[in-house]
Image 1 (cartoon, one colour):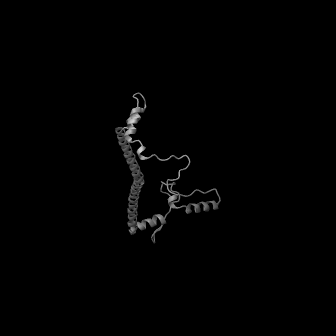
Image 2 (cartoon, one colour):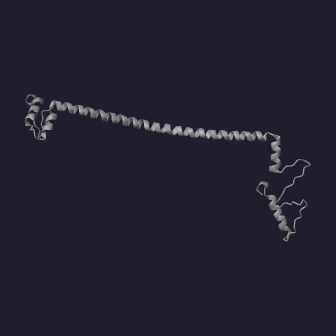
Image 3 (cartoon, one colour):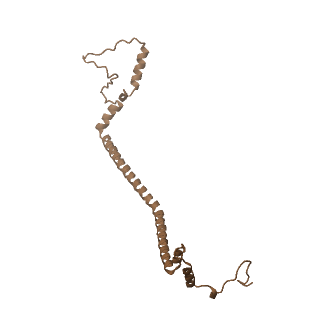
Length: 183
C-alpha cells in the first residue's frame, strides 16, 4: 500500500500549493474585513508584519525573563543547602573553640593542684586535716561539740545524765561516726 494514497472517511484531499493564498493575500483580506470601530482592528494590527514583529520581541523578552528566573531558582536551590551547612559548621566551630578554652582553664587548675600535691608540706597538712594523722609522739585532740565553750579556764565536767548508760555510749558512737567536716 502506497503512502498517502488511502484516504479514510471524512478526510479531504490536500489542496495544491498553487491554490493556497499567500500571507500577503491573507493580510489584505484581513485588512479589507477590518472596520474602524470594531474589536477586530487590534487583531488585524497583530496580523500585520509590524504587529507580528512587536509580538515576537515581547515574546523574546518574556522567554528571557522566564529563563533567567529558572536559572536563578536553580542557583538558589543549589546554593541554599551549601550555605546552610556552612553557617552550621561555623557555629559548631565557635562552640568547640569555647569548649576548648574552658577545658584549658580546667587543665591549668588541675596542673596547679598537682604541683601543690608534689610539695611535702602540703601533703602533710592534708593528711592532718583530712585523715587526722599525727606524727609519732604527738597527741591528737578532737572537739566533739564545738558549741560549748568554757571561758573560765577550768576543766569542764559533764553533768550527770539522767538516761541509761547505753544511751551515752550510743550517742558517742554516732558522734564518732560523723566526719569532722560535716559536724
